[in-house]
Length: 260
Image (cartoon, rainbow, N blue to C red; front, side, top):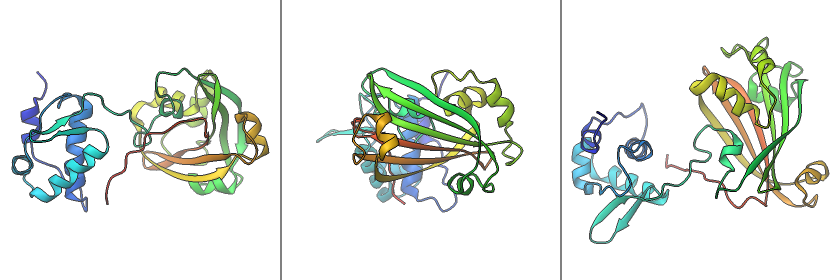
């Protein structure tokens, strides 16, 4: 029999070193909501009771509840209390997942069309993020993602050759076994190594498409685009760099933000 909501809320709160208490509370409640231990429509205890159960003061609990409501995980009924929302927002950049899954919203069909997959030499951009030397061997794939038939994003993926970075994953052997079908490299790697990718960092910047990217995205060369650069670790070593050039044809991406 699984953990009940009462047992989950009464279990000791684990706070990582230097982690703000409000973030620990947020993580506990968000995990319970996402996993279904706290089902949709669940009425949460009042702030004072929840603080007592978790063994913390009321202030960080209040701050965590505000964040959870802002992120669409809770809703407030005036005079009654806070409830787990009936419809959870989709996970976005806060979770390591293939970009085709992040961009898939509203039920529209998503198509990944690999443009090229090749053995390449690391540029300064790639070498810096993978912790290797300029010119070292890497794998590269460029793909075009379309949503509902319209070009939406260009995905450029870089992985180190296992000869150049001891990340604990035989990337050369793994990639040679992949089908090169209509998926990103990250999607194919996750299928092969599962939850081994445990930490990532994503940077966002605004730019313009430029001539070559504009032709793929079917936009003007001076059209604005969003650039996302993601570095993912495997066994605490950089193992993947993805650069996503997102067209304004994409209506929105889900990004969860927490206080420091």
